[in-house]
Image 1 (cartoon, rainbow, N blue to C red):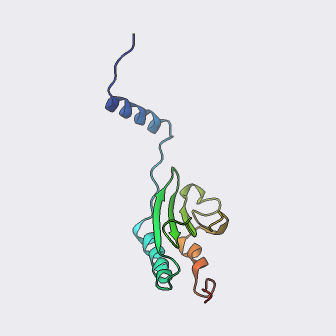
Image 2 (image 1 turned 135 degrees about the vertical axis):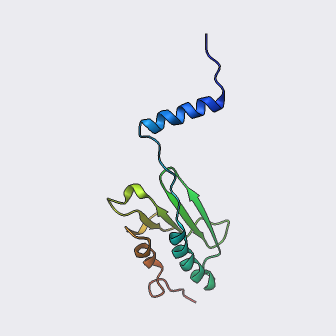
Image 3 (image 1 turned 30 degrees about the vertical axis):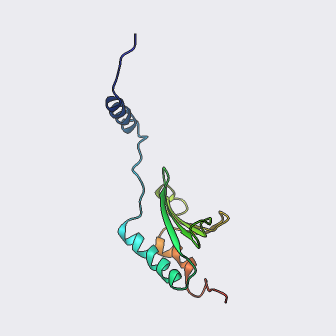
Amino acid sequence: MSEVVSFDDHYLARSAKSARSGQFQQPVFFNRIELGQILQVYGRMVAKAEWRDYAIGQEKSACIFAIFHRTADKPLFRIYKEPRLAAKQGAYSVLGQNGRILKRGKTLAQVLKVFDRKRFNTID
């Protein structure tokens, strides 16, 4: 016959097994300094009336800051933090609306240079 196990016991047993086997990954978030840098650029573009909304999301191995012109639209830009790519191409990247990588780097400040005033001007 089978043994009845409560969900709580099963969840703890499953997470302990995955932690031992090296499969457990810590969740990825933007820290306070990183959010400050991103929101500084975001605030500057909101003042120009280019951006109006943002969303912060999370995947298994990445954290995403999505920037919208309108809430119902697709995001104009997505800023990714993927620590697993830190040694290879850099942990941070900026993707455009079509999914193309605009900038990738090891520091967030380096990646956010995509939105510099000189490089990212609005046309009236």
